[in-house]
Image (tube, rainbow, N blue to C red):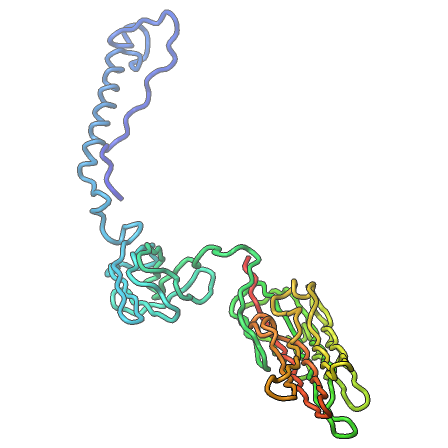
Length: 389
């Protein structure tokens, strides 16, 4: 503890009980009052107070300025910084112990997995929210505040970043098109979309072994939920030719194949769904074949797709069927060629799931039978997105 500039306290006994008729005199006792009522005593105490003020003022000449304080007494330490490879090196805490507040100016960005040293000793890093540090925890040129625990050998950072995108924005975390396990990377709210595989439009021959037009297959069912997960929770994911599911929470069956056994030609039904707390819907069924006797062309049925209401719930659902078949007469000879044309929207990575296969078409020209190729249904999927809040 520092020494007091004044060794003893000044008396605080000047009278405040004067009344009308009291006589002021050099000595209070000469007019029947106390010593403290005397004019001389009053002046003595005024001089003592002024002397004390001068003594206190002079005492500041012996105090250290803030930049002269010993290192251990600083409130915030300014650290040196450098980076070599994946190691960020901080310096400036030699001789300091305990938990201290610091700041450094970064000349390089942090990348996930980088390490730290403080005055040559390895330290671990920790975020205040307990999450793992990710890329750009800080960037080059940033002034970075940290709390350094010299005993625990830890550099503590505040949880990084503010909201950069509007609340409710969906960020794709993982897309499954085969069986797997989803491990929650971060505690928060997630949107899970489960889509069943589209059915296949399978080619069949009639009783005379001639190919003929085939109906379309059904689209897979769709279930969508908003769910809250905790970090490191895990959920089994199934994406098969029969079912897509997310644990026991959501499931969607695949669209049915078309059934073109001669003479019956039945379109495939759409798959069903269950468990969605936002949306659950069956996929559309495939359509039947369309016959045109005038041209001798039987068009294959279209595969099932999704409605505009479905597509508003998820960008992964297309209102467009897979494709259609067309017949083109070759100019140099008397025959036609059948070809199918892909619908661009159904091949988009955001609209590629669950569509039913389009059926084969048939063309008869001068007793020659030509056929197009039936298509398989599009893959099912389980899509996990994080909902930014």
